[in-house]
Length: 119
Image (cartoon, rainbow, N blue to C red; front, side, top):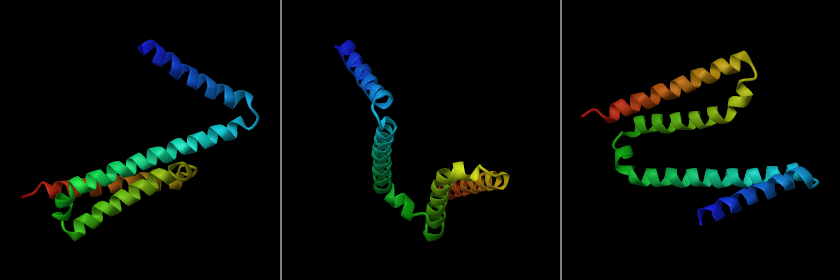
């Protein structure tokens, strides 16, 4: 039974590869398929984030407004920095700024974590 599933999966990948290579506008089709997969992946990440927020809501609110704001701000800066990495790494200054931002994000997350573990 497992060999049939493997053969089916290999056939699906082969059909997609043939479509990209031999059909006109195959690259556009591959780009569309990639975009659909990325949207599905992002939706999955949002779902996980919502579940984690609901599970740890009490812990998050016990941090207080200032530290919770630092946590959310650090996460937002991390998302923007990771998204902008290819463009920022085109110049030396942008690369330095990227590493500084990521360093500040890590420092902020560690600070909030250490505060959350104090009694």
